[in-house]
Image (cartoon, rainbow, N blue to C red):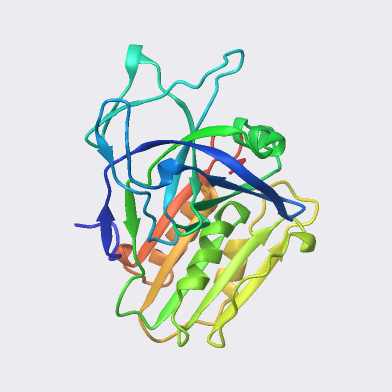
Length: 276
């Protein structure tokens, strides 16, 4: 049984070396790094294999960014043959997953947004990024489209989910109906996103509280007015918060498990995805 009812497209995994074109601060808490490079087009790799052009069609597609281990000068790279990934000498790349915020094949521009709190490897790289810097990426391996046959969409996440939420709002049809709840650090972190007449967007500043310590999202969902039609829910953010939201929707609201798409982007106390 599928985890959810979203249409899915799989892609072969391709390793690409790109460079930073520009860096922009979207808000005080979000930095956008625009990547570019010839390898976003179809290209022939060092083994003579023709790799496909970069493709990203889903609002929450993610790529892996490959960073250099502390004290080393070059990143550990995976070995990819015909879309299958292996690791040389037993060493895994120092990789972090990030959402594709925007890709324009005409200009070969790939935008990736970084939450700049914390001190993880990705946050540090984004803070120091400047035009001309190099980085390898891999993916996306899968793209998922919007679900069909739903009267109402519920979208819930913290700032790490905001790039995907912004993309989702851009993909919504003009007559979409839904509710969006976003937890952010403070009002200065509110972003300009697409607004639709049938979709309410609620920003939930946690003010002085640490990320992952509040019940703002769960409280807001519990207090929300509910549609009588079929609801599809997309949940993302801190793992424990996402787990609580999913449990509430299934037990208290009777939403089928396959009508909920959920991702724990990060775990409190763990910097693996907390800086994404």
